[in-house]
Length: 169
Image: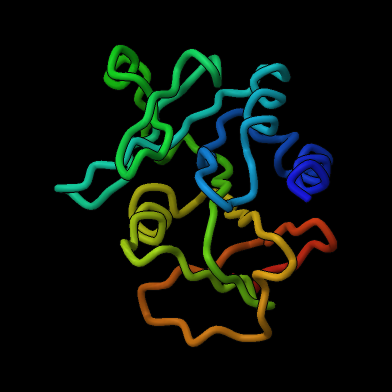
């Protein structure tokens, strides 16, 4: 299923047109992103992945050039950029054209529930409000309508192995 989602992502015009993308690194049962990241790097894209700053409750985008060499276990054992590249490869949010993010549940409007920390919602609202927002999900993670809170940010698109769901942002 992750492969099919990756295939669809690589065909998206918004992804093709983006020079700088911010994409999560998969963990546990999330849609896998290693192949997508590697392919985007092969295409010459500038790919940033999140470094979680727990005390500040924010995500810091850090550019990587190699999925295998540039990532180490970080917050909650989620792969994050290694220490040596964290400062030199930081990206500011206004440079990001597309954000590709995970979630636990999505809805037909582009609503998304994350894992409770609000990291991505804050990042989208304050750091990169201009960026296209694309959620990756398995189709079974999509429901008709979520009870969202005021701080929950809507997505432009949710891509599953079976369909593309246009958000209402």
